[in-house]
Amino acid sequence: MSGKNASEIWELVEAKRQVFYDLSDRVWDMPELNFEEHRSCAEHVAVLEQQGFRITRDVAGIPTAVMGEAGEGGPVIAILGEYDALPGLSQVAGVAEQKPLVAGGNGHGCGHNLLGSGSLMAATAVKDYLEAHGVKGRVRYYGCPAEEGGSAKGFMVRAGVFDDVDIAISWHPAPFAGVNNPISLACNEINFHFSGRASHAAASPHLGRSALDAVELMNVGVNYMREHMPSTARIHYAVTDTGGIAPNVVQAKATVRYLIRARDLPEMQGLLHRVKKIAEGAALMTETSVRSEIVSGDANLVGNTPLEQLMHQNLERLGPPVFDEQDRAFAAEIQKTLSVEDIKSSFARFGLKPRMGVPLCDTIFPPESGDGTLVGSTDVGTVSWVVPTVQMRGATYAVGTPGHSWQLVAQGKAPAAHKGMEHAAKVMAGTAVDLLLDPALIDAAKADFRERLEGTPFVNPIPDDVDPPVMARES
Image: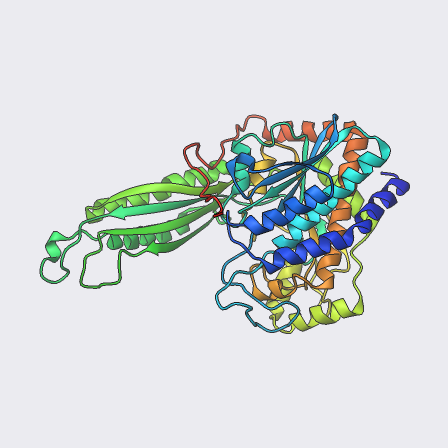
């Protein structure tokens, strides 16, 4: 992109900044969980209508998924947004102390209020650019719910909503700005339902068959398995149903939910098979039965070098986000609630040398930074198996802030968060316009995509018989 074009797209982002600052703040004020983001989705729909997008509701049959499109003909560039929150993270904004707004309430502990608003901010700027210059091409904003364990994008991929998309672009709030190192863990979330036989635990224990015993034996077996799996894999579990609270009753039913993660889909599917065998062994030992039920799943991220280089060029052209002394002062107050280890770990994750006394991002981290050993899962990974995809990290909170923490929620409406969101929107919008103005860039991205996945067929980690757990909104 020429300097003139870059300046123009940045100005288009700036021209409507308050619209999207306000949208982000409204979504922060109404934190909603997986597949329940009715109000948050409605806020995005209202802005899509205001900005002149063509709107498709109930995308993939999910009431809280929406798509807005603008432009005509040409390539299709998708910009992905999210707006789901997390449970138990309610927090007053703008204070550096833990202070829930609602005891036990929800909170935007992963910054998705910013993620959705920033992506729509970028899509709107691209729409305005296409209209101003008569450029052929379409930009789409996908409002994607339930990233936090719901894997909504996997259901959307399965429904084919990205089949005609040429390139997908996304971002995520972070302590630093740069192109995301495309490493994430493939995962499946799966329930194991054990069924046994109830009896009096003292008078007739020999007649009972404990489903809870089976759960405990399964957990022991999986814990022993940890020594014999790849070091980058992760397995977590939570007992979601103990079968009751009476100790004098042999529990006839119990459920444990497992989250199985690995570097790629084939490795994850191998671990899943082993965990299922352990569950069957636990059932055999306790003379119970077991039924497994996949709830959700994400594929690992597939990188794309041409897209990552292009996005990094846009980042370098723009420079790091600009924060002022008030921004740094509040970030420094947040850092006082963190440990030295929190701050050092934050730098290390992005491949940066730790520097104490740096409250906010002041640099752009280089591509492929970090060794990828401490990563999670994202349903953007599933999209990246069907569309060439690129993501960036946008600096929106204090260095050292843990993800999924009250500290992150506290910073969600801060001026620094707005500035970091706008910075990310400029980079995404600039990258999208570059692609629309130069089809050769899209061709290069697609060639890289084909080469990476040659000989590796895509298997959606969400089976065809699993439906999203959606509920229609009450009238």
